[in-house]
Image: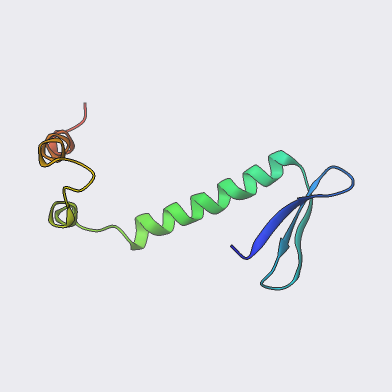
Length: 85
């Protein structure tokens, strides 16, 4: 992971990075930390949507019936191909 969050003596939070071996964020409230994580997740999700979307055929081609039966897979595929209302 390369970092950890610690509760400071004043009750707030800090982030310590083992990559740069120092504090990178400090005096964060719980809510500020949650928002920092949410923003990171938003950026990552936007990057996935922009650069890493695969064609739907990959789903069909790479399915292996180890953790789901063929029948269940086909049922889900049918639902996925039906337009949402």
